[in-house]
Structures are given as C-alpha cells and as structure tokens.
Length: 117
Image 1: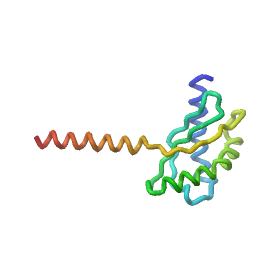
Image 2: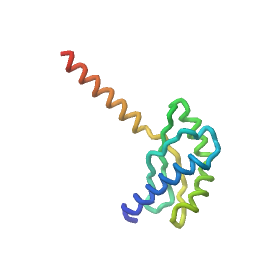
Image 3: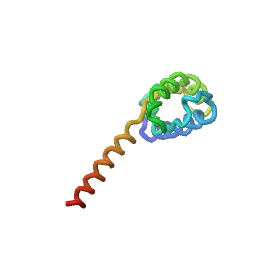
Image 4: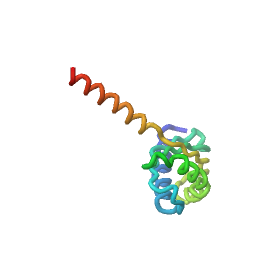
C-alpha cells in the first residue's frame, strides 16, 4: 500500500478518534486526551495511536481507560472511516513532547551559561 494512502488513513483516524473521545466516550479518565499521531501498518490491520494527557500523573489510568474503550472506538470508526477493516488499536503514551521539552531545557541552560561567561 502506498505511503500516501496510509498517511491519509492515519490522518482520518487521528481526526475521528479525537472526535469520538471528545464527544462519545463517557469515561472521565479519558478527559483531556490529545491524539498526537497514528501509525498504521502497511496491511491496515494494526494501528498505534499516540496520545498525551495534561496531567502526567494520570498516564497509567488514562492508558488503561483507552484500552478498555478501544472496542467502542473501533465500532464507532466503522461508520466514519471508509476502509474495509478497521485496524486493531493500541494506545501508546507519546513521550516525544516530554523529550522535546527536555532538549529545549538543555539548550536554554546552555544559552544561559554562554551569557554568564
């Protein structure tokens, strides 16, 4: 399958999963979740859904709640995304934002040290 098609499907999944979580899922543990990316396998049977939360202390609770809601989310996606088979969803906490913040902090610290020398 072409990269363009998998990217288009990934984008559609990001949009629809975000909407379903915001409007359809009634679990309070899933409030304030942001879907940052979806990586779909080439055969469209599997998708890793990357998410972040505002409160990092709730990562485990949110991850568990998303896992429990994945069947419902897949069911809702059947009517919203036009592909033959909705992929299995695996929700994974997106560490890239936290890592980017660490790198930015290191760069800021280096700039401060340069200014003081």
